[in-house]
Amino acid sequence: MEAKKMSKQRKLVKRYRRSDMIMHWTVAVGFILALLTGYAVFFAGTSTLLVNEVGYVIRLIHRIGGVLFVAAPVIYFIFSKKRFGFLRAFRWGKRDLGWLKSAPKHYFVGGGGMPPQQKYNTGQKMFYLFALVFGFLLVISGFILWFGWFSETTGLVMLFIHDVSAVLLTLFFFVHVYLVVFHPVERTSFNAMATGYMDKEYAEHHHELWYKEVEKQAGKGNDGDSYKKNA
Picture 1 (tube, rainbow, N blue to C red):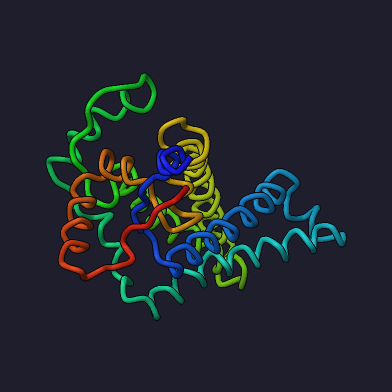
Picture 2 (cartoon, rainbow, N blue to C red):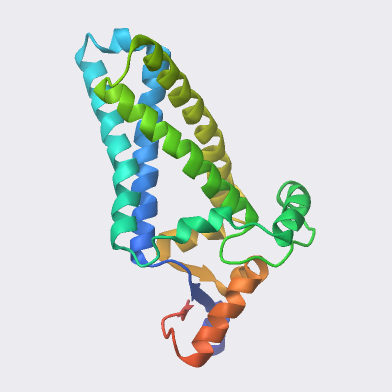
């Protein structure tokens, strides 16, 4: 009986701190709220939604979503020791080119070796870079439109930037959701962001360079919370 229980246990590696998870899920909730209400405004038209209570609620939820989308990373940046972690999105090398060449077969066909990766692979860095650039444009244009800091011409330009940024982020968002929730291999990443821990075998296979660093630090006794057993 004991042997059977042990066989069900798997080793987990600590990947995210609580502050990381809170920031991630707050941004996600904010984005989803802004996304759904934003498309309601886009398809129904601002003039239609300005004249009824439903429109007022939709626009209010849209702004609440926008505030959550902005506030979470700002607070994280102020208080977290890992505030400059976003810079990883700008660090690229030969392994990233190898990842890009191997990714189509790995993700959409199955199989195929992938170059050793750090804590965040090339695809994740691409997503972060995309989110940083177009998220920034979305936020700046959104606040300009919210507070009316524009002439008629500037308003049209800001609206165009806001809508294009929203559409592009939506496309990347659905790819992100597919990979972490529905992809049969990659959805382990969702568990990591939900619990803070990642399966050891997955970490070793998909983030080999980072996993070796975790092992090295655990061997030195610098991070006693790096591993745990899960039945």
